[in-house]
Image 1 (cartoon, rainbow, N blue to C red):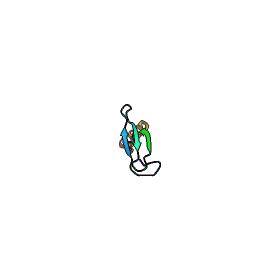
Image 2 (cartoon, rainbow, N blue to C red; image 1 turned 90 degrees about the horizontal axis):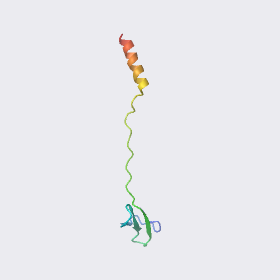
Image 3 (spheres, one colour; image 1 turned 45 degrees about the horizontal axis):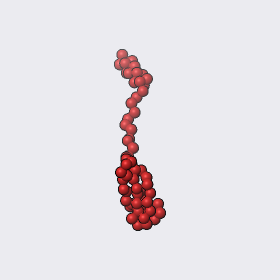
Image 4 (cartoon, rainbow, N blue to C red; image 1 turned 135 degrees about the vertical axis):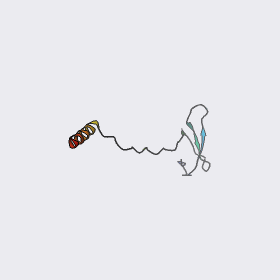
Length: 70
């Protein structure tokens, strides 16, 4: 997180004693302080796998194979 006043790239986070995942962000350069939630690194989105065939397509394909081999 960057400082909102001086754009310092790194500011210090001091966790709260009584509220989980909330604390004080403090800039060591200009002294600006802001209370806010803990920033967590974002997780990459899961890539969906191959989509299963709908049941209607499976039955049609199976029926076509049965007719072709008969």
